[in-house]
Image: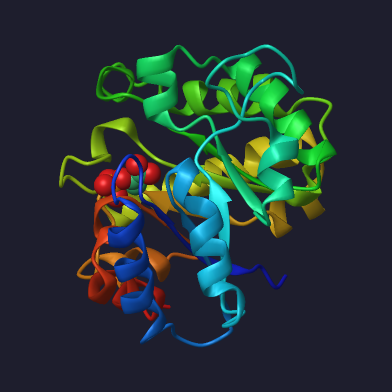
Length: 248
Ligand code: PEP
């Protein structure tokens, strides 16, 4: 088993064009070694500029934070997987908890997006995770299992990365403990084994996300089933993001 190590920065709805270039040039000053796959997810209008900016360095890939559940057509304001692919992106985030919470994205919608992304040869980071109420009710393992099953059933999992992001830890400063994160990542591998097979369970990278930062990344990345991080807030500061990349 030789899973990829991955650190991905989700910039969310932050950074104007000039701010994004400034952030990326800061990151490129200290990009870490090539053993880590590094990805940034800028806001849509800024992706092309960042893709071109990092192009020469070859050390970073870019991705989109979302894609449409439709292939093309009259869907004002939406962006298709094909368009995302056409501007040089290699990745797309699907099912982020903010998409689920604020834009009504269900597992079924995530599934449609994943299919279109894969058809367009994009790699998918599929985000899953329970709310605080679900953890308190002790349903967190079932919630995550359902998120995996409903979105991934019948899909070729080869180009899928999972990000486990407990909703209660996203942007709150409250991180899952090493034990909580490892326990859930191990559970996700069992779900992947049941849904697909042992090879898929062993080879699929599973990232942790939720207030992961330069101080706690090393402890989390040391867990046997954690293959890296999906980073929100701390990816907006070049020094912190570069420290996280060097936390393996
Ligand atoms: C995220 O939104 O994917 C995330 C992990 O955010 P933060 O690191 O800010 O908690």
